[in-house]
Length: 202
Image (cartoon, rainbow, N blue to C red; front, side, top):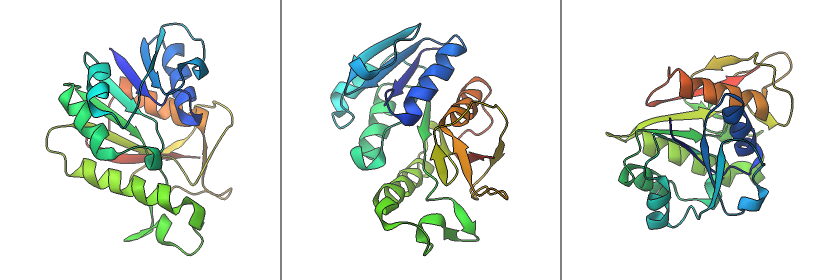
């Protein structure tokens, strides 16, 4: 498969890149700062801007799969979705947020009193991105939301998957970037959540 990863030098993106290459995949890494992309085997780093649709289309052409691991407030979901479609990409996976997950029927995490105001712009824009994907008639998409605490940690390969509800345990709600990457690459290799959102947590 030809895989392109947008946002390959970020917290989630860098772990996804490593997981992909550890499993033998060839990856085109698109980022504003190619020099920040880890030097890994089978990786081609290319400078790209997520707000330039025409340039993105050119970079994405020929890809079987595109993964978007960019901050929602630093990108435009419409531009990303339209660029993926215009490039003729078969499958699109998005690194989602936890804010749009439900904590009770009809109650999203970002609408609870405990949700920090500083994270609301990113969380609400992520929810809007998911809404746009759900309206898509053509695109084969998947949106993977992490748990509430999305942090550096270990790659254990031991986690739970869920749907639209926030996963919690006696230790709270968390997932490491490393294990998130495992879940995302598992989905690429053996798709089980086409045209839907799912979540991962301990």
